[in-house]
Image (cartoon, rainbow, N blue to C red):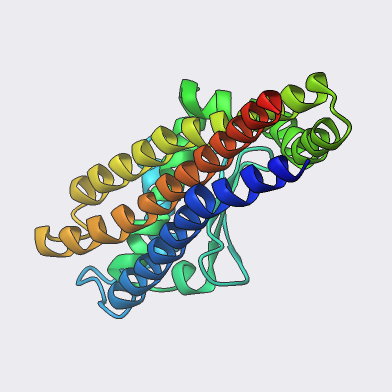
Length: 233
């Protein structure tokens, strides 16, 4: 049992803590980049809400609303309600960061209307992943301390679903950002210099999803290594 604790603590330090530090650095970088370009107004004068609605119209999406939501960086597309919710710093702002974020969320709505396969898979996984990630560690710990391999590896399988979810999310977000840049170029709402700033904002945001994937892989690997160490005991 002491050996199990050793493996748990050792792999937490070696794998999980570095992943947590990476996530923190990426979050700080994203907020810094977003803050910088939130103070740069677009010459077109369009707001985030204007841009989201234009991207929707240009792609023939007529059944999605664009509404404001409280909070900072709380922007998201709700596929069930068919609505894009933009934070106050994006909805009424004409900054190049706001236009990029709005176009990105509109990109998700376009993905939905086109039945983009990775988005469809991710959306279908949400309820399963929410359940699996909530109980995975409990199942794993029961298996560890009760010496029940079925629970031990069951916990690993459940957690692997969350890791798979992060893996699928990454291309979904990258594709939405790609659509956003194309939309901003096609509409002429931003010139080339402004688009470069928007690219930096969207790239910084994409790194947060990559960091989340790395953190999930690190935790999954930790579970596997703990299980292997327990088996050797």
